[in-house]
Each structure stands twice: as structure tokens, then as C-alpha cells.
Length: 52
Image (cartoon, rainbow, N blue to C red; front, side, top):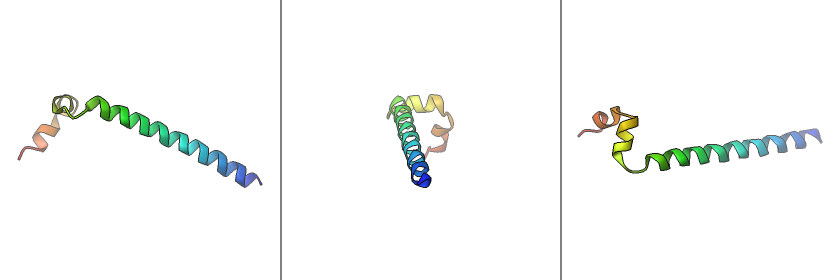
């Protein structure tokens, strides 16, 4: 009986953590966007790493 309750609580907490991580990563990716100048400002090694 207690196993079901504990498993339900752990499942609920893990789903909340997963949603928070998804939201934070979505905000981070939206902030960077597809503009490469913003990416190069935060990560200067990107421009030298992807020169062909």
C-alpha cells in the first residue's frame, strides 16, 4: 500500500521536474534564436569550430 503512494509521489515529482527542465531549455533556445550573432556572443568558439 505504501509502495503505491511512494511511487505516485515520485512519479508526480519527476514529471514536474521534467516539465520545468523543458520550459527552461525552451526559454534558453528562444533567447538564442536562429541569430548566429547572439550565439557567437555567448559561445565564441562556435564560429571557429564550424568554419569550412
